[in-house]
Amino acid sequence: MNYHIIAFSIGRILQTEAVLLALPLLVARIYREALYPFLIPMAALAAAGTLLSFRRPKNMTLYARDGFAIVALAWIGMSAFGALPFVLSGDIPHFVDAFFETVSGFTTTGASILTEVESLTRSGLFWRSFTHWVGGMGVLVFVMAILPMSDGHGMHILRAEMPGPTAGKLVSRMSDTAKILYGIYLVMTVVLILLLLLGGMPFFDSCVHAFGAAGTGGFSCRNLSVGAYGSPYFEVVIGIFMLLFGVNFNLYYFLLVRRFKDVFHSDELRAYLAITAVAVGIIAVDIYHLYGTVGESLRHAFFQVSTIMTTTGYASTDFNLWPTLSKGILVVLMFIGACAGSTAGGLKVVRVVTLVKAAVGDMRRMLHPNAVVTVRVEGKPLPERNIRGVQSYLAVYIFVFTASFLLLCMEGFDLITTFTALAACINNIGPGLELVGPMGNFSGFSVGGKLLLSFNMLVGRLEIYPMLLLFAPSIWKRRRA
Image (cartoon, rainbow, N blue to C red; front, side):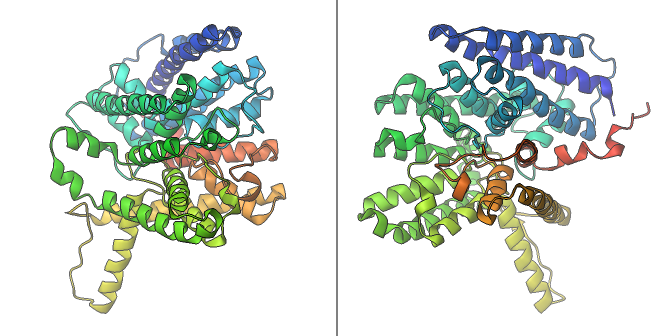
């Protein structure tokens, strides 16, 4: 373990968060709100960051376990500091509640302890949603895009933070890859803001909802979420963009460089769109009797499938009142999630595709023991170690989910509330069913329950291993020169 490079990296990250707080500070200035809720955390972040990164380490070598530690500790630290503006402003007086809300923001979960949001300060609402946008593509990927970093250093961090079973470079330098990803991300966000403005949504609301859709987070500035605007236009536009942000961003780069074959032959993309279409069709038929017209049924089905599949968590209607089949499909979609390399959570479609193909391959081997069976994903043979990696990930995921579920059962809520609350947090979705449905919230959980769910949000966003490895004694052993 290279403690010096870990401290140095986290210091730079905290300094970056201090700079990010300048935006909600500007919003506070525009709306004539108190500035100290942001100035104090900015000063604390700048001081802590400078103290940790004051001296550049002589040995800049960073190993895989160092990258895991940096990512996990940085996300915890940024969430802790990021909660301070809510506490200081009085928007969320209790620190654990503010920490839960901030973790939910950075991990793009969208789960909230707030019973209503329209009474919050404008600067607080902006910071709450802006955490979605920063966390969507990755906090450390953002740092890599603006600060110089060695290629080896960046690769270990990218692998630890980027969602999906693999992470790679689009171009030769990792910093250039980060800039490309964030460039695409920024352009898509701006386009969405403009489209919402064209529909008549106020500029502030447009920014808030674009941040939530881009980061697939789901925080809104309205108590009724997107449904508050009562316009099919906003539901369709936001629904389409949620699906777009759930696509692997590498594919957008391939479109830019005219590698159309790589896009159209993507197994994950085809599966992602097929699952979405089938789910929309079944739910639209199932809820037709509630809305009376095909168009309205399709619109509500499309929006809710889009928001759950991409783990965004916006709501246009109370799907808690839908038939059991429709709610069951939404729960299944909670676990599948969207594509790897996107801003969404969940297991990821590529893992589901890999698991299905590996299972089919195993059954073929049972029937034909001498046959040579190759599992192909994205048109390429998948090495056995990659298949084992996906299967191991699922096993660890199930273990963490089961242990957390049993602990959460001690809260005393009904089974559906408990199960879907955990599913919503570990898959970074936001709303569940029953008490934590689209019209509910997580305020009823105890301090211990909120901390457990915060841990699960971080576990889900960071793909489990960085958070779990913090508890492994071997990771903290100093590496000998």
